[in-house]
Image (cartoon, rainbow, N blue to C red; front, top):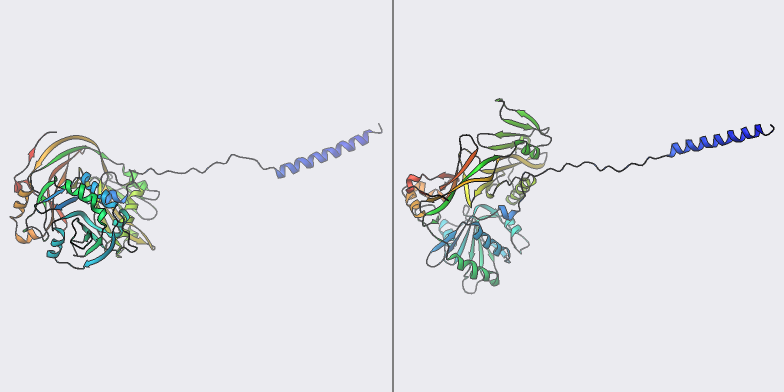
Length: 442
């Protein structure tokens, strides 16, 4: 029994040690957990993104030969030319005319052995450089809407490109290497002889306006009207959008904490976005305006159909992209057919002030039929009957699509017709003036 007290003491001592060890373990224990990655939200773009050369494109080519003028508006033909130009080494861009007269511009644009490339809007030279190979270290911040390719240079001179601003009369010249034009001369120029013949009337427009001489055969196309969910645009354009309704309780509107709002416009099948804080009177640098707008629309996948750059007003920071179907521009008085972006500044940060665009997509083709339009020659004759002041104000004439919609808005039809551009506005030319068109089936 004399050892009982010793055993108790030892047991008590061991219990104390165990208690201390457990306490230390609890204090120093760190549980292990699997690392949980934060959830990321992937915003799906509404449609695909596009690069600059897919959007900033010419819409017509003319080739001036000794005998006649031939041309095309087929984008496949235009693409062949553009691929050739991309391989050229363009150098020594310099100003040769600051304010050329219409007569001087005409001598540049409509001389023999020259190709004329038509852009629908003024293209800044830095944007052209981003697509092609200008080797100069400094590119002037100037714009052009006509590109002249001189394929038969005068003696003792290098082949040249001329960048012409048909509005201001400013003309830049650039040099080319002789070897750069070999493929152009042997393939493109030779093929151009098979293009349609184009004619003009000196009484129409300040600068010559060329149209296809013979009757123009185009296709009337019907599509099922597929509207894009307004909420998709709201999620893409606004920060945490909240849905509200307009006074008629039908039109959807979205807004966010910044004060920006977006509204659907059912009558014109469009949406309009406004950020009131960003209104400004500051002008934009043209190349920045174009690049920033391309990036903005790419960011939400806004190229839902084929849109081409159509022009800008850098003074009020406004830029436009026109809908094209089957290589023809689309116009309408009732349905929105272009993307229009206007920029501004808020707290020193450049951002979009307004954005108006179609809320539909052309996906399911429903029907087609061939339409034969009046010849370009007859169109010129009809325009020649106008008053001299009206004739001189015309700046372009082209076949284009006019939009009509079915009564239940389930169907949209693109009907080809002739359009005339006067003072920056496109107007449909009534068929009664040109003798009407013929219809066929496809």
